[in-house]
Length: 239
Image 1 (cartoon, rainbow, N blue to C red):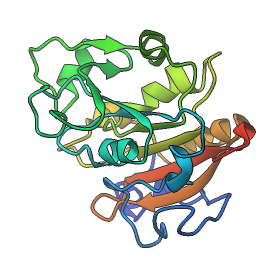
Image 2: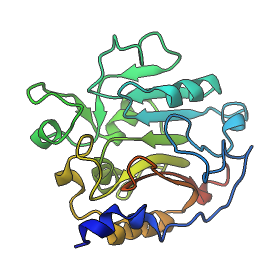
Image 3: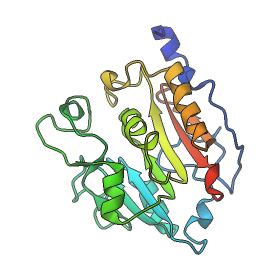
Image 4: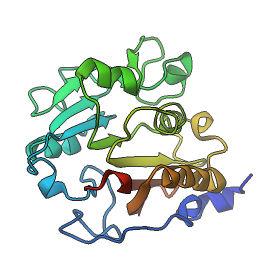
């Protein structure tokens, strides 16, 4: 296991991850060396996603109080859906916005979600659906952009949905990856225990085998055990 010093080293879990497709504005929003990934995501080809003549579908998993991504994608002309079972429909982040909000979480339910989630009540029962169930209910057989920022629970989403599915994979992934040593205030240590350098590299190798290439990597300035990534699936033939 890595030492506390190693875990505290800036972005140590992500040092082997490199941009496989170096892109620059305006193809991406900003130079990933200057950004922090919060709110404004480095989606590739953002300006043409909803204007290319084909239907554009975007899912945003995890909102809390910040729906800037979902608002931006809807503004660009994409059919945009936001998901968060911990957010009230009356929240200003989702009420009367230009995207569709669904009060359920995408992933696996369980008591650990309540006890290991800084955003959840310890007593309330939350509604969960799998990614496949969600797509079926909403009538989508593809997703152009899948964004998720779910405080360590992304590892479970990768293991149970994205890396093991017969469904068509999203064309782009935008996510924050949390590793061991992430701030306890937001990320339960139990959720990211053992998730460090080796596990990060195994994840990105698996994603590479599925056709995904890194186009943006931004290590968090506030918490170097976390980093924002954008990946494009080259097997899809379009950005």
